[in-house]
Picture 1 (cartoon, helix red, strand yellow):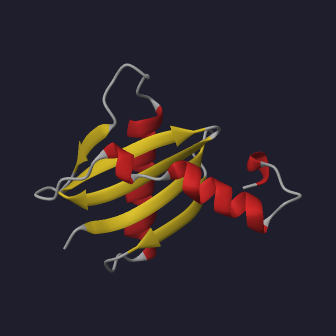
Picture 2 (cartoon, rainbow, N blue to C red; picture 1 turned 90 degrees about the vertical axis):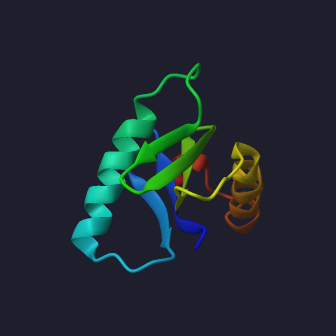
Amino acid sequence: MGIRFVLMVNKQGQTRLAQYYEYLNIEERRALEGEIVRKCLTRNEQQCSFVEHRNYKVVYRRYASLFFLVGVDNEELCDVDDVKAPNVVTTIDGIMKHHLKLHI
């Protein structure tokens, strides 16, 4: 199927944007987000940007104070450059000119 979910999370681990491409109820989403966010935020910069979790591969990228996480099928391959964090942040900056990234 490809991409299963996209998350935008701040440095404190709070989900700021979540888009799921498969059905998960609220409890499953909260559990999944909590587990994945803890896994990704505790990694240091020398470690790779791919994490295996349950039946997903999670590709993440940090941009400023935000983390962008993309969950894909295990058999799918996703390049970290496909996580276009700067493009998303630039778009949000264009829409919300008077807000800082900290407000997101």
